[in-house]
Length: 80
Image 1 (cartoon, rainbow, N blue to C red):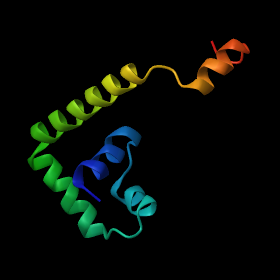
Image 2: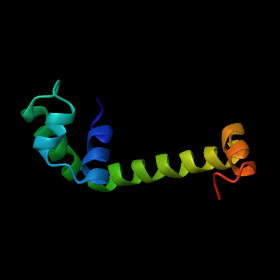
Image 3: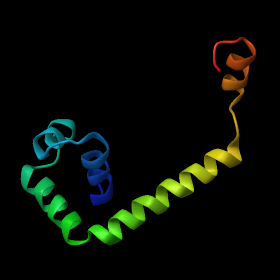
Image 4: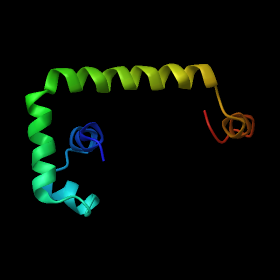
């Protein structure tokens, strides 16, 4: 697992180190704390990386448009 993936869960879900360990039992508590320490030491760069990843994902989502399933559900009135 990459530090940025671990930190994403920490930020997105507000997970504590203990919850991260529960969600990812293959990581030791020392690995989790080390990853979080690395994040805080490199916060500016990692936050920028996460923001760029999100922007790229949203760009791809826009380019892809609606899926066939979403279109079908809209025509059936099951989605707005």
